[in-house]
Length: 359
Image (tube, rainbow, N blue to C red; front, side):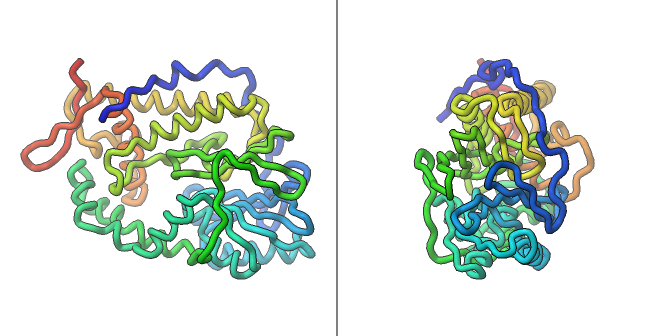
């Protein structure tokens, strides 16, 4: 079934407030900064190109509710212990809120909940997705999934790497608690003196949780809206015809329509910022530009998804980077298929190539 969606540029109103950063220096290792009354900001290191994740702690009675965890490694455990022995000394963790199932956000959830005897609060999708990968890490290596990537022009080396992502994931997470408290969009969550509206976004991660305090115009945005970079939005082999980029842009429009322009955004990476509507308009425009690059390339000749990767990512990529670039390129392709701008044609060898749709 094809779904026609209007282009982002038609929906993004011209915003008035520029992007500004009330705090221009992030916390260093072992340091905590108060970003709003009763909300603390810490930063944990990551061994990736994006080398950090933001952790927020919300005053909750005689302790703090933690938002997100960092990955499961000794360095991150030591960082948590240093925070609790240092700037948080004398305070306890009351509960753990996880925004989504990616390892930098859920990796230490099992360890923290066990170590400090606190409950886990997350979306049902986040809980089940983490458990699904953790319990069956080799499932992503099925021959059918390798064949999917190869059919779209991916080379054998990269296909093998993408197919082993489950094992890589498993090394970055601790086993989750057996039970959790489900966070549901549209409901409210009281933490200390604050009452948050529970929101959820899609595209980067399914049912990604965000928390919005309307009285303070404050949004804990997770990875849905970042100030200077765009989150990875990918097609994966388990949902080959999915439209995650369509879901992502729809989620962004919903945020812009429901939250005020002067919202204070506390993101999962980079710096807190103002200028939510401006940033959403920039992200929507960015993805429209990338769609236009794909359409221009396909006008020249039929191309596989792999052929299109250097169109969007012209720099040299290692196999790990290539796996994400390929899946993100595929997300733009599937959006254009859903919009009926592109169609796929399969040759005698089973290779799928993209051509412009005939009007």
